[in-house]
Every structure is written in structure tokens, then in C-alpha cells.
Length: 226
Ligand SMILES: CC(C)(COP(=O)(O)OP(=O)(O)OC[C@H]1O[C@@H](n2cnc3c(N)ncnc32)[C@H](O)[C@@H]1OP(=O)(O)O)[C@@H](O)C(=O)NCCC(=O)NCCS
Image 1: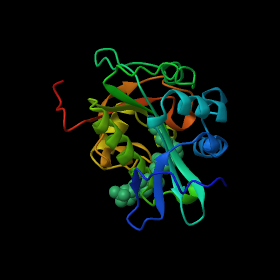
Image 2: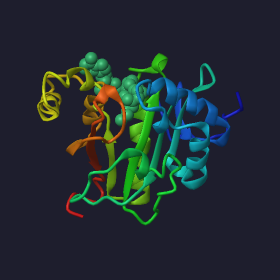
Image 3: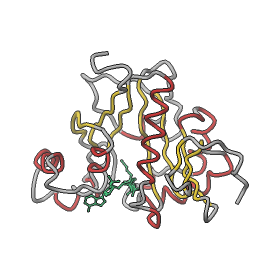
Image 4: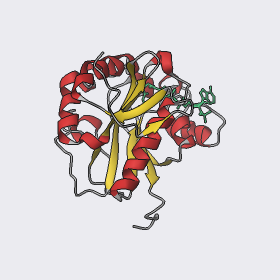
């Protein structure tokens, strides 16, 4: 593996084993590997490849985060963000066109909102707080740039298996009330994100029945009525 020891840590785990750094071009094939293993049900046309990750790093380097395992010397998780405009009255959108067909050509540095395009933790490293480190790095970025907040189309990955039993709104109410654990949304709710609405046909993935859930984290330095 290339030597990443010189890269500054943006966030670290309390024992120092895991460090969040800005993603580097040398990492793009590792990032594609993590992406493919993290999204086994996502349509191939919506998977981020090494080429996509390279484009993200060129267009908006500050928004690209990777987690390094300093013990095993490898990249084990990542997240990808861009700035795009957010219109709360018209928030319905489709994932891939919103992110420039995966290349982030829609990045608009004048937008006061950061958009979460992607987060994936290698399955061998889940439930160790790595996504929490990434959410912290993303929220820190929002505050550093003085943006209004972070939003995303979350994938409710427990809903696909339930979609014949209950409508999406009933499922979400159970998740919000902590009566049901959703492997993606429950974690985001714990990290301070709140649900704004439902986005049908957000992407093509049976695990979430193609739904996205519009989630928002607002910058506490700015307030909610901006
Ligand atoms: C979603 C994902 C990023 C989470 O990453 P992770 O590093 O495992 O998450 P963390 O370890 O930071 O947090 C897991 C939290 O869920 C909690 N949790 C896990 N299983 C749980 C369960 N069955 N019931 C209740 N809580 C549970 C953990 O306790 C932890 O919360 P805590 O830190 O407050 O205790 C990871 O599972 C992933 O990469 N999934 C595939 C890709 C994906 O779906 N990305 C999201 C697209 S929107």
C-alpha cells in the first residue's frame, strides 16, 4: 500500500487505530472495492467506479473522506460529498443524475448545502464506529465551510424485505420510534439526521425497494430558519 502516514487526520478513533483523511488518487481502486462490497444490490449503472472516485477527488477534494486502519495499513471505509442546491419545496430527485452520473460534475461551490452521495464501511469493519467517524468529518466540513447543513437520500435498507407487509411511511414511523432497527437509517438518526420526506424511485436497489429517504442535518452554528 502507498504510504499514507503523512496525511493529516481529520478525525480519529479514541484508541488512534482508525484515522479519517481526505481521499487520495492512489486510493481509488480500494474505494471501488469498498463500494462494490457495500452495495451488492445496487444496479451496476449506479455503482461508483475508480474513475468516478478519481473525478470526485479532482472536483471537490475536501468532500472526499477515507478511513485508514493504521494497524493493518489499509483503507477500510469512505464517504463522498458534493455541494448541490437544496430546494425544500422540490426535493424529489434521482440519485445518479444529481451526482453528475457519478462524476460530481454537478458540484456547485455556491450552494450552502453539502449532499451526501455515498458512505460505505467494509463489512469486516462494521459496528466499530467507523461510519460515525465519517459523519463527524462530514459535519465538521459543513461547519468549517459555514454551510447550512448536510442532506442525503438515505437508503432504508431494511425496507425491501418488508415492502409487501407495510407501506414505507409505516416502516419509517417504526424506525423513528425505535421500534425497528434499520441498518442505515437508524444509524443516521443516531448521528443527528432527521427525516424530511420520502423519495420514490430514488435509485435501483431491491434492498430499499428503490426508495430514498431525504434526511437533513442542520449546522448548529447557522440555525434552522436560514
Ligand atoms: C451503514 C454503514 C455505513 C454503518 O457503518 P458502521 O461503521 O457499521 O456504523 P457504526 O459502527 O458507526 O454505527 C453503528 C451503530 O448502529 C448500532 N447498531 C448496530 N446494530 C444494531 C441493532 N441491531 N440494533 C440497534 N442498534 C444497532 C450500533 O450500536 C452503533 O451505534 P452506537 O455507536 O451509537 O452504539 C455500514 O453498515 C455500511 O457500509 N453499509 C453498506 C453501505 C450503505 O448502506 N451505506 C448507506 C447508504 S445511504
